Amino acid sequence: EGGQEVILRCEQVSVEFDGFKAVQSMDLTLKRGELRFLIGPNGAGKTTMLDVICGKVRPSSGRVLYQEEIDITRRKEHQIAELGIGRKFQAPSIFSSLTVGDNLELAMRQNRSVWAAMRAVLNGEDRSKLTRQLERIGLADKTHWRAGSLSHGEKQWLEIGMMLLQEPGLLLLDEPVAGMTDKETGKTGELLRDIAKDHTVVVVEHDMEFVRNFASKVTVMHEGKLLKEGTMEEVQQDSRVAEVYLGH
Ligand code: ADP
Image 1: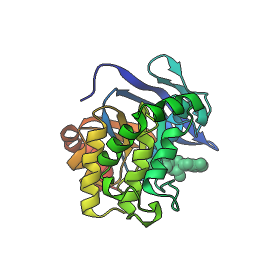
Image 2: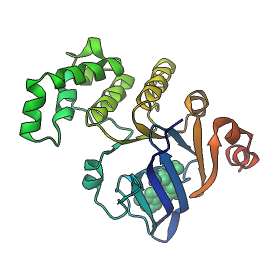
Image 3: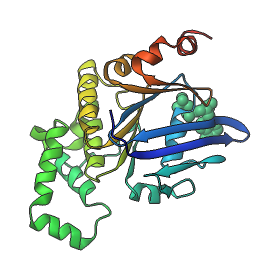
Image 4: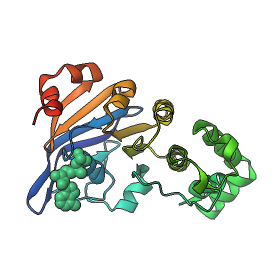
C-alpha cells in the first residue's frame, strides 16, 4: 500500500470556527499511491480536513506540506488546485447539456496553454488519453450521451474522469458513493482501487459497509481529533472506535 514517498503531510492542524474547535492538532501523512479512508461520526472534522488541504479553509495553527517541500498552508484554493490537488464535492460539477465526451475534453484542456493543447491534439495524445479514461470510468459506450441523462452513479464517475484528465497528484473525494445503488457502489470501489494504482486518493466516507469492503488503511477522527489509524482490521478491533460508533 503506497510507496515510500510522502505526498502530503498535515502537521498539528487546528481549525476554529468562531471559537469552536472543529479540528484539533490533527496529523495526517499520506504516501504516494495510497487509498486512504477518513471516517468518524458526524461532526468529527473530516470534511473540514479536506477543506484545509484544498485551501478552502485556513487552519488556525499547524501546517500542510505537499510533496514534502511545498508549504500550502497559506495558499489560495486555485493555487493548490494548480499544484495538482483535486477536490470532488458531493454534488457533481458536470455540464449537463454537453455530452460525456465533451465534458471530458473540456476538463482535459483546462489550465493548458494553447501550444500544449495544439501539440496534444496534433499527435493524437488527447484521443488516447480520453479513450483510456472513458474505459476506466465505464462510460466508453456513452461518449455521445448528454451528461444530464446519466444515472446518479454515472455522473459521479464522469466527474472523477474529469478530475483524472487534469492529472492530479492527490484526489480528495467527499462521500463518493452517497446516493448510489449497491451495484454502483461496488463499481465505484473497484474504480477507486484502480485509480490508486497511479494516484493518491483520500476518501471521506460514511458508508461503513463500503469502507469495510474497499479500505485497507483507515484514519478515524472523533471530535476534531485523530482517534485511531491503521488497517481496517486494527481499527475495527479498537474499543474506542467501537464506543464512538455505538455509544452516545
Ligand atoms: P464531518 O465531515 O466529520 O461530519 P465537519 O468537518 O463537517 O465534520 O464539521 C466539524 C464541526 O465543525 C461540526 O461541528 C460542524 O458543525 C463545524 N463546522 C464545519 N464547518 C463550519 C463552519 N463553516 N462554521 C462553523 N462551524 C462549522
